[in-house]
Image (tube, rainbow, N blue to C red):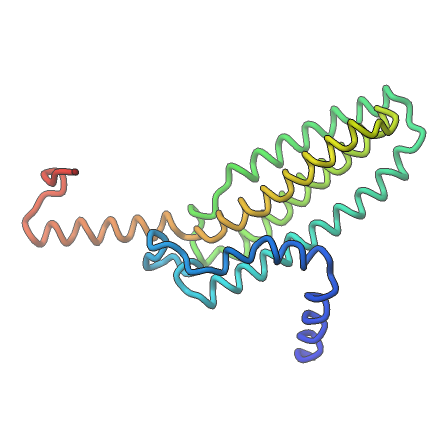
Length: 210
């Protein structure tokens, strides 16, 4: 069974267009991380295996969410067909609230403040919030396209903005995810530094900063 699952995953990695697209975007993140993240406790940043596993999981996460957006796109085009413009306006107002709340909360929450042992919970939370955020944007795109009666210039601008938002969000989420456990690691290293200075009879507040 496990061997069959690996074969299916291998096949999907090569046939899933969203996985291929996201994986290509995240290729630079597989490079060696900078020294400032190589702290004891920052498991995903300092451990190559852990970092690569996180990147693969994050690629699957965003590929799945993009497929959810395709489903929302098709359902929205069908559901909003021939809706009056005042109804479309109400839909847009409702979607604005959803995208503002989920998008704002998704950007505010940072992996750095989450301990490594809660990584799976954090991954699921960001999955759900990002899915809600992007699906609300997709539905908004459809509602606006109907409200402007498929004006090609407006649709081109909206499509460009939507594509750039998605690309930026994926890179941001991956960058932030590699900082998982950073705050806890910095705190531990700061305590270790304080103990070292105390053992040497040096007060940290007396040390000058160049």
